[in-house]
Image (cartoon, rainbow, N blue to C red; front, top):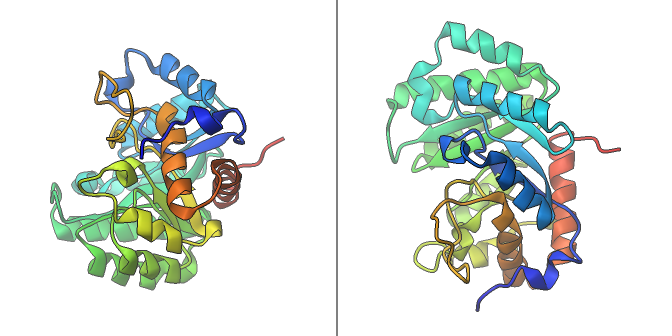
Length: 276
């Protein structure tokens, strides 16, 4: 059934979008308005994703402009793994120590696109896990069509890590359980609103313990398909996070307000984001 965020937005606690690519150039013309629209519906905090050295610097600039509302990650997406040379690795080592940076990543493996060779992806992944262990910050993880290799690497490093989130989870229950066995958090996006490819997540989210659940938009990607009325633009925004929350709450048979409180608390805890 259609989900109306207005039916809970007034009562729900503030939300935290754990994955927003706000450094993406699609936001260049109206980034401040995007932030304002998000705040208007209760999305008062965001973690801006760093997926390359350039985007990490942009993310840091945004955090410095909005220190109460934002934190960021610092890392190299597997698409850009071939770019992670010794010079970049040293730069990330310095960036990861910054207080604005709350996680290392987006890092992991992507064998669907294969924009970087598998060998380069695996090397970059391990280098970033090593960095996360050294700076004692959690990891912001990406995995697509690479579950077995991903699990092999994560099992090797998990005991050294302070924590992590399987960001933008779209797989099935077996993969979810594998990540939970590693004591990872699981991030759910508007993929759950996609009647073609994502409705299996309505079953998966019932099996994710509340204390391991996080929510995100992954904007500008993954605009929820069931928004009514449909936006003119296909660009996703953090103002649609309440819609994602409502879909998850509906699937779990919980109130959106209680789930908002839990997921925001989870995010603050994982990313060590202290509030006054």
